Length: 174
Image (cartoon, rainbow, N blue to C red; front, top):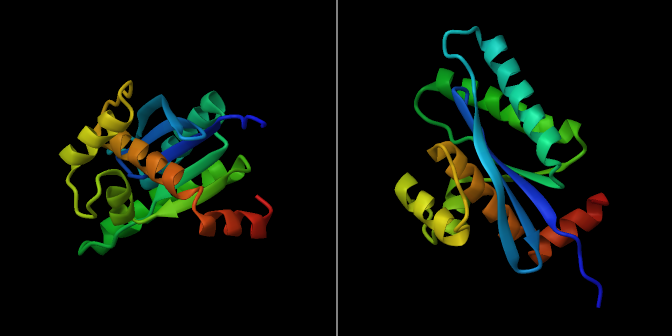
């Protein structure tokens, strides 16, 4: 029997003001908290500078944590088209940074993350924080965004071993 090396997963909750990130390690059925935090951009800066701040911050996180895989929450469309577009641009940065580092980047709908972690697709922020603490008792997070990022990482940890995910990775050579 060979032991597999732990897989480090970085979850990213994209936002233009605050992008949450959370890292976990998965070894078999064991999941361990590694770190979490937020990358913040200055609301007074021009959009390009805010996106650059997210890029630099996430790049630093990747360099420090050396994850093997990344997972990003998909954008939901709301009534404010301009806000949705800006969120989409922040999400693009959240996907670009790990992709540039050569990582596979999975995407999950907000309801799928909530259902995976809480058991209900319409859970609120308080329920997500509570379940992240139950699943990762040593977890520390500075914001709802960081807690959401850990939930995204947990969702990926649960789905990455599903038969469909293994087949998709085999087809892409990952």
